[in-house]
Image (cartoon, rainbow, N blue to C red):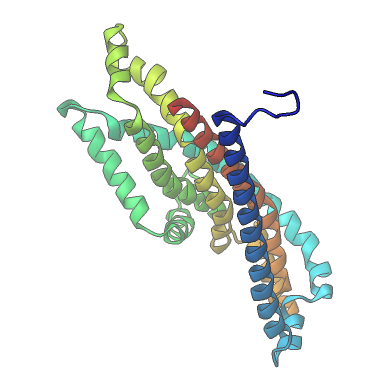
Length: 293
């Protein structure tokens, strides 16, 4: 071979060129797909916006739902009342977590000796999952205080909060139970072989694994719980939360803007929680893929 001649490319070089070429084509196709998606979204949303803004009654709709004066007049009080929604959520969440875990454990117990406990837990979950949360809040909020039983709270908002706890604990219990059932039986067998009792196995082996697996679904339930604190408005009376305060201003101003102000308060809380849940789901997916690899 003369000094001016270049060595021919080997199979590895040709393979790397093909890989780069395929990668460039994929990136070009991906960029085109993103551009088409963005363009189509802009066109559709622009068309919808054009139709809405040029509709016959848009000025009346704008005044009824997007009044700057009504927003400025009502939003400070709505925001102050929203603090009560946050308190309801923070008070209910730990109780729901603990009580739902107890229900899930009871439903997961095996053996005929535990049948009464399993039956009671199953009836509880079926009952409170089958009845709308609004009805539970309504019945407890207006029913129990009217009994006049000495020693029990008489504030309707308290029983409305209890209704949320009873309803959501049934849903969260099923999430926990799915996590418990997902733990491989070999984990339990290994723990029992090491001499751990049934309760020690549950506490130290099964429940920690189950809880880690169900954290993202639990976050979805608590996003819904934060929104459903507005249901306490039907019984809160003298202690208005954000939705009831928005209704009060809507009735006094004859304008729906305060209700949109209430929705804005909830969005500020729920959207970051939703994105955090998506991040946790993605992290869990990456971990599963890494474990398989």
